Amino acid sequence: MNIQVSHKGQAADQAAGTIVAGLPMPEFKRITVEPISGACGCEISGVDLRAPLDDETLAEVMKAFEHFLVIVFRDQDLTPEQHKAFTRYFGPITELPQAPTYGEHQDMQEVRREAHEPENVVPSFEHFHTDSPFLLQPPLCVVMRALEVPKFGGDTAFSNGYLVYEHLSDAMKELLDGLEVVYSGKEIWARNEKLPPEKRLRLRESHGFSEDELENIHPAVRVHPVTGRKALFATTAYFKRFVGWTEAESQALLGYLQSLAQHLHYHCRVKWKKDTLIVWDNRFLLHRGVHDFKYERRHLIRTTVMGERPIGPKGPRKD
Ligand SMILES: [Fe+2]
Image (cartoon, rainbow, N blue to C red; front, side, top):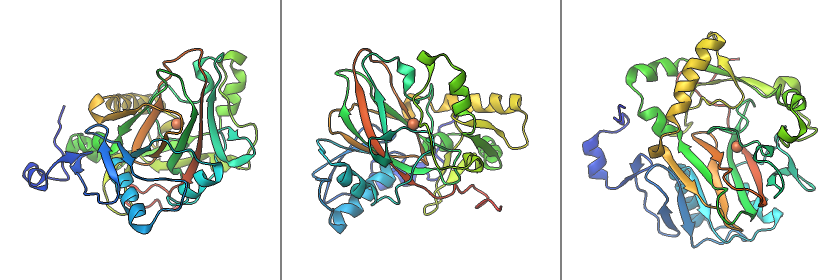
């Protein structure tokens, strides 16, 4: 595998100090930040999320989020309103058409698997994915908190889409830079209905989204609107095809790209405990639940932040 990192030369990296998540480790003064792996993710301590954050602490939390893409806080016993208040630092809370909501909170979702249920009841997908890429403005991030977790297992794993892209050859980057993907969430309810009851996902029964809002075209490579850093934004979940490609051609390339995200050197993995809160990026990072537990309950609640319309290497889409 070609593991050159093209955005920065090796000499410059060495001069800049420790590299983590593909860039020099930032400095933090107000919060304690412990990277989880060399690829992405950090644990933050010294912050109580029940109260509003002062400006400097908030700026450092955001710096950690931008750099590591996954930030983990332990022992955060929040009310739903405190959870939402913290979420709004990242942007406006958005609803999702397909994810089951949490109690009376239409602006929160839950991921719940009862002890007697099979593992496929939760739409965690077989592979790393981003959430709801079929929306015109897919989520920027997810803020998830654990209410109840298995004794062992049930982790969430993450794969850094920047690193996947940066490790491609220049020729492959050029090919992908010009590609767009059709993502569609139109068929998931109909497909679910056809499955035998024990195989069905737990989906939201009704929502206010129109049919048209459930299918959109996005670039296969996504560009950060501020830094310009590029990441792979093509995954199997809700994928229909590359624009202008046949289904067979699309599936062949997608299969290769999806295989890249599996490499351990792009990953971190987080073990949940009760009251662990994780914010993960949904633009430049892939995630998946690890359903390696049985006969135990797993219950997580989350908010979702609306993101910008994805920007490709050739700029915003003109339509
Ligand atoms: Fe997901």
